[in-house]
Amino acid sequence: MSEELKFEMDYKGDRHGLHYNLESASEQDVAHAVSEVSQLVNEKGFLYSGIAMLRIDEFVGRISESTPSEALKSISTSTLRSLFKESVGELSKLVPAAEAYFFYKLFQKFSVPVFAEPEMFSGKLKMDKTHPKDKIALLAKYKSWVAIKKMSIDPKLQDYEVSGTLCAINETLVKKAFDFSQIDLIALDTEAKKLTKGKRKSYSTIGEIIESIPDKNQNKLEKAYLLHAILRELKVRPYAHRLMLSKQYKDIKVPKPRGRMPKG
Image 1 (cartoon, rainbow, N blue to C red):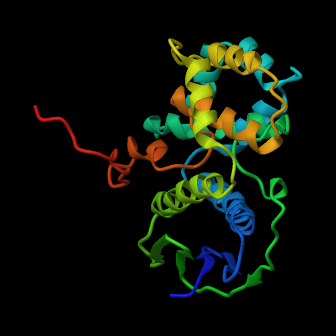
Image 2: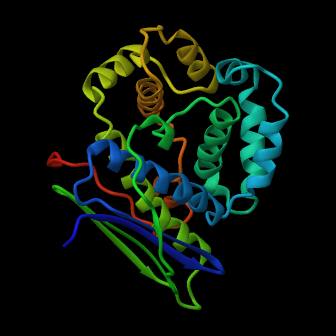
Image 3: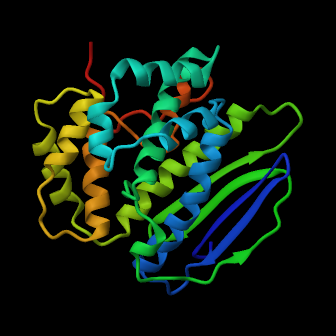
């Protein structure tokens, strides 16, 4: 199996084919390519989830505060809950997807990264276009990393099933971009745990914690991962992922935690 990264999608005329040759690539090269693919997959994961993205886009567009922390502290919980309910309609258990999309758009509005972005890496591989037909697939091989996810498109396939596959792919890409980033993830995870220790999830609390992040002359990538880790500690994932779908769509399976389960 050759070392490469390939993402292909052909669904309802939404066609994309991205291929990177990873032979002799550096980890910075791979991180750049992975984050580039993730940007596309993330958007498509939300697009087919079933939420009314435009409602959230319009709401975020009207936010007048100057930072994400100010916005989260000033917007009432009831206002956000109403927004999420309106954006999912009768699909009431899709609220986690609406919340994830809100956080994604909120940080995007203020140009505050919460996951790895292509411009953060020095590497830049040539991307070749492919021409997929009736499938969604990720094929990745680099050193010990192997990822293969495939879905064939047929007339009975529903949008949420496509979203589920895209979310599974995106979870892998978001993680691997950081894994190949060559920053000290363990130290940043430790700092995130300290900043969130004893804190319970609430929108205002998230705003306060973000505001309290000390300035340690971290680079843009390190800041992005620290914020990503803080949100993860508070059970917030500002990107398309399977858990946001699983309560509404029972056939969307989320990965089980690693390790042995306690007996009981």
